[in-house]
Structure formats: structure tokens, C-alpha cells
Image (tube, rainbow, N blue to C red):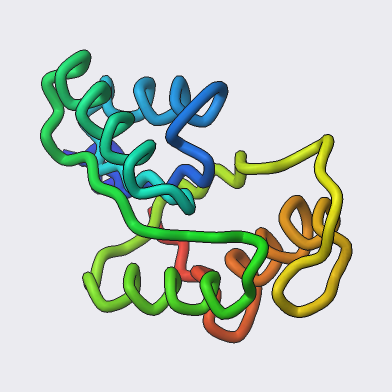
Length: 133
């Protein structure tokens, strides 16, 4: 079998609700190993249980990620890399649009979550830039 047709490893940020949840469901339906990345463990647990029960795919997991904290992004990348899995699909879905405040590092909250967090996750020195087919 062609290597690209085998099970893929996928990460979906904000995979606990909305478009992210439906993206995770779709990936799980194809039999892929899906990681839900979000900041709320209880919401993630509900999403993981929903995805598992609706798709029959038990290869759905949660890893904590708070995009408003660059330290959390680095920790998430480290936790994922410790699993020694390739990453085939990264869905940078999480975001906020009607929030005020600043990130842990002092950046404006929307900019920090929607842009800086995802940039570091994807391209940073400890990011996930290990995409393989």
C-alpha cells in the first residue's frame, strides 16, 4: 500500500467545538489518528468521547494547548514530539474574534491567539514543522 494512503496523524486546534470539532470528526471518519488541541480539558474530553462514539475510531486523543501562552505552545509541541509520531495534517482552526485583553506575554489577545500562537506552533523553533507524507 502507498505510504500516503495509510493512517495519518492529525492535530486540530480548537477541535472541541464548531468547525474544529467537525474537522476532527471528518478526519476520524477516515480512520486517522486525531489529536484535539485546546485549553479546556473537560470540553476536550466531551469532544473526544463524541468523536469516538460517532465514528467508531478510538484513536482520538486530547493534548492541552492554550494559544494565548507561548509557553503552552512550546509545551504542547514537546508533548506531541515525545510521542515520536509523524505529523501529516495540522488544522490551525482555533481562534477568537470578540475578546479583549492580553496574552501571558503581553500581546493583544486576538493577535496572540489567532496569529502568534499558531505561527509558533507551526514554524517556531520548537514547532511542529515535521510534516511528512
